[in-house]
Length: 233
Ligand code: CA
Image (cartoon, rainbow, N blue to C red; front, side, top):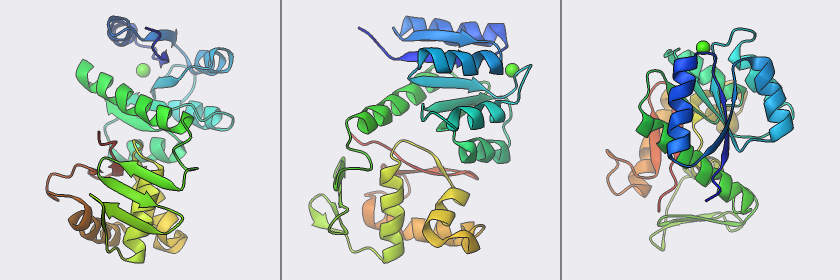
């Protein structure tokens, strides 16, 4: 089996070894980089499918690594960081990271994030993300051209904002979107910090699409950070 090539950017050798051992055990291919400079070089020369990026590197801030890579590549970046503050996660996601893991993390958690990212990647490469006019995920269906959404073949009665929210999340399925990003996309910059309103719209949207709104299947909450639409089988 030829699994995805993962670039592991981490200066701490024991953590790096833990990650690479996990990857090897699960038949992923991998490359390692102990510095930001090495990460940029490996990314440019080997074109990895996913980058696992530690933010605290000896030569550069991981945030600058994200920004530099994003200037020329859309490769998924999963941040692995000891910084557990919400603001750090938000900054990394807003700079273009796709997901984050906080140290210490479990091997299962790491593998789960890789699977989510690979599914998202497969959707992007299959061209079913962003370009198709019909999106399906589990029992959810969105007909972008007609401007209608369905759950279990029944049309959902969504307000314009709920529909916009649902479309935004669906077009980024598998990716954590920050409050800031969502409010900017939905309302423009003037609503930038109105997270409370976003929470209200998200709650009403969930009531319409989730069978059990208190344990949602489609839209996951990342407390203090944002929301993500999960890929539902
Ligand atoms: Ca480090």
